[in-house]
Length: 196
Ligand code: UP5
Ligand code: MG
Image 1 (cartoon, rainbow, N blue to C red):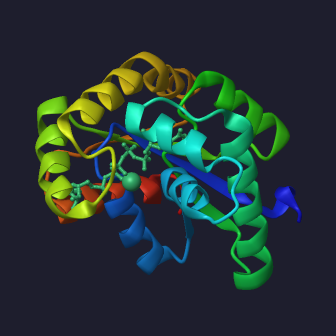
Image 2: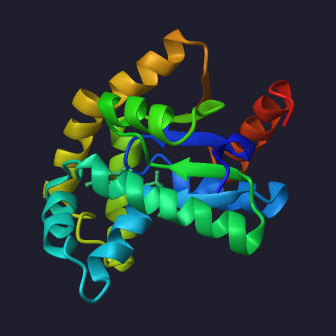
């Protein structure tokens, strides 16, 4: 496990902004490894024998942020595994960090990120997408009550992370209200500017 050989790109944006959708496209074209912190937490929640299952369930339903010790450990394990088994070295870390102390801890104890891809969309757009997805997703947080709480957490707790990275000139901000293909075209153009 050699963090010095790793490139990390954080992928942030409000709930339903399209982080997962854009990451899938990037994986196909660039060979990055996609790690969604939310997906890793949901997997851990469902893992038989997990000591964190019940806790994770509660946090996700309430739209609040799981203590970072759990999330960082899951991310680090998944990164090691992908490096060893798939020889991957560039990671899209999707939906993390969601709080300033998480950003600081990860960049200090794991590896500093190269930059952050930030998907920007207003709440009305995200709400419509999430309610629509909620018809089939089975996600415990795709309901109006949880969505409102997720929005609130995003504004109050997660946006300060984006703002701090922005002040360090480490954010690529993309308008996420367009169609998935249009968003992706913008992403590709902006990555080129970063030599990727
Ligand atoms: N869609 C996507 N792009 C579209 C477009 N351009 N036009 C029209 N429709 C578009 O997309 C959402 C829906 O919109 C889909 O139906 C898609 O087809 C459509 P998706 O790509 O899934 O959006 P994404 O931004 O990934 O939305 P997601 O719901 O996954 O975002 P969240 O950030 O809310 O969810 P996440 O899984 O990251 O986190 C869930 C919870 O886990 C958090 O609330 C928190 O409780 C917990 N968590 C932590 O505690 N810590 C962490 O580090 C991470 C998560
Ligand atoms: Mg997602």
